[in-house]
Image (cartoon, rainbow, N blue to C red; front, side, top):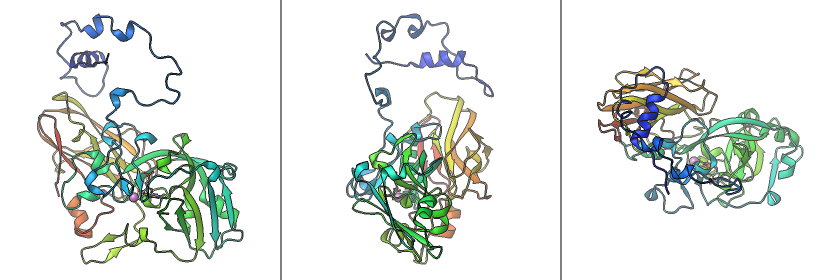
Length: 420
Ligand SMILES: Nc1nc2c(c(=O)[nH]1)N[C@H]1C(S)=C(S)[C@@H](COP(=O)(O)O)O[C@H]1N2
Ligand SMILES: [Mo]
């Protein structure tokens, strides 16, 4: 037997709920009509539920089975060198469960046992070293929450509104609490040469996904992480060990990390030349665009999360983040950027982590052009699409952090549209 929530019961609940700040104009109806969900004994109260060991490792209840990663088939030739998207339209808070956090692989997700895991540090060091997984666990560790955003997130939207859903336009992002050892600690253990201005990091998968990272960043906040949200990394996120490079493009977060070489020059690998550079209007390309600029998106209402309840109290919510610091303010517009209201941040913004914002509002049932605009503690303001195009032209893919617009119709349905 399946559980059903009727419109009636939700209204009844809203009637009884003490909400502040908004008047519940929409929550009238029912009380006179008896609600069988209240007045009759239901099947789930007439017998016993599952015992404690029914699912030794739990999964979401069946009614939530549509809250999953999804890919866009035409984007890539196969699923091995491909990407899928976090269902951000259906999540709340800021922590992304590993089970639905987007995946990006260049040669598939590999299966690597802890026993077979090795991490080598070589190059300009006093003592080239090889660490086992057990070795890494003996260094002092830290916990930090950071977002990881693929530089290609929102990349398909450069020329015009394309994908119909926040999951697809903005879902190449996840935000987890990582446990790991600062890379600095391991570099010090190896005795890095101060003339070494770069480290080259590579993974154990066939693609290796090698990237050059300036030594200054390597010594600052980069983590060699082995836990995410309290548990072991999932295979698809780099089990048993991945690099965490706070605020910088996802491509540098090398999974299944196996080697770190200290050098005096960058390698200029495939991933930092032919890929992950930004072609400008005159045909030249920007490189070393590591930081992810401040960005935000309304996650609900949005095309996959339409308004179902008609006019009246409406919670508009979304996510904001900046690779350069903490989010200080998010504004929401209902009229395509003509006027703005300042949203409520669920918690003060934290450096290089997702921030949840809410605008608790009363919807008049009229069409809206919903936008959000993030600001960070460097004073940076998220640009409009035309502001971004003025600087970057139309040839770019990566690092598209422009303001997103959802057209919300009076029916409550929403659609991806462009307001430049
Ligand atoms: N070894 C290795 N590391 C990798 C990749 C890869 O294919 N191989 N993909 C990179 C890219 S492009 C991104 S955006 C992030 C994605 O991390 P996720 O799969 O945990 O979401 O991992 C990066 N690290
Ligand atoms: Mo990426």
